[in-house]
Length: 555
Image 1 (cartoon, rainbow, N blue to C red):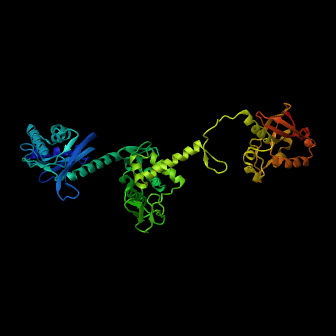
Image 2: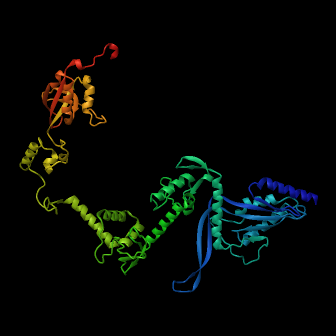
Image 3: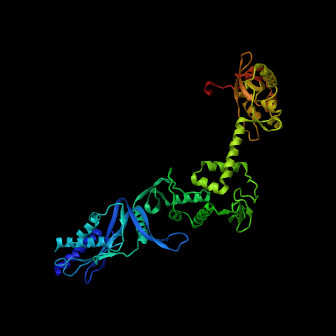
């Protein structure tokens, strides 16, 4: 008796040391006999496919009240199955004469499989009679369970009650097949979350490694982001009305954000706003429901008439056309704005089959085809026709040669060449120029223009020059240095003076009593192109104006 007692407590202490920290071993009582449970984990390194068949009674037809039995097949992948519970109790003469009394409980194994396991545990006891056996039982159930029961994946869960008798120590948890799917998925999700929280994860938004307790994982793509970054991302998307679809923030990932992640990331107001948007979107996809176009209302409206060409708001009773969203116009065709016209057709052509079907239900297939044809006609007119200068009707050239002869072009070129001496291109073609209202010169297309260049030694009058060229009271201006060649092939380098500042600069230079300031000459030069420019230069030759250095060290 004392030997059995010591062996029992020694075996229990060993199990505590090995499995106590993982909550696998749970002690129920220590006196008068030792009673405890062991949870046998069922964990797969890679996801395995599980199948579940559930029974459901459905009607044979919509009008019939007769019911028939139907089987629904569901397949999903998981890494964890609910554990098998081994509840044991040590008799007083264990392990010398008898083995432990036990029960096996499982949520996903049937009675036949559990009974087979009970018989196998008895066999292991008889092979090791007189010694402790719990550790061997645990190792067998952990490592050899699937091989012993010949379980192959994908595995179909079958919880049917067996017709033959079964071992009374085998306990099936008593759940229905319809509930098993939810239980198994919930357990797998909770275990994966525990595993996720124990690891470090990289957030691609803030680019930091954070513990799993501060992160959220998006399924099925498995991308992880910290809660703060994901919350800001989703909140911004909803607030900016970019909420047609909420996808994973990872680049090139199309996984959708589920409601569980969304509810954990945004506040209640934004979540309600997004939920309302999804509700409205679902109503829009319904064929019999449209929204009132009035901004003060916007309530769901019911389609009327057989052809659904009229809708009446259920709240404000506004009667409108469901296609163009304007007041009901009877048999008259819908009128769209030009931009809305093109936007609808572009959306229709670029959309997938579901989008096209939705637009066809909304506007009608014939209306969309007519709109598309009108746009193609407009593009053809823009490409192949021109408007008549007088009546503005589109005209198309149908005969004659497009080649222009020399005799036909000569008078036009002579007139253009002559007029370009005094008229800019805009005045020549249109009779007026936009710069006429501002009294500013326009030099587009002119062959001749007058420029004012200040050349010579300007360092001595630099401060006066800056004041004269200042464009406003702030004193801001820019200086452009130009190099020109005259018709005599003489090179002139100087500062380009704006026409509006020539008189001001001349008065300023006269005040400082410059002797050479009155020496002006007008030079006609030829540019690199075909245009000619008249250049009026102001030469500064007075060497006394230059600040000479006092010594060689000043250079």
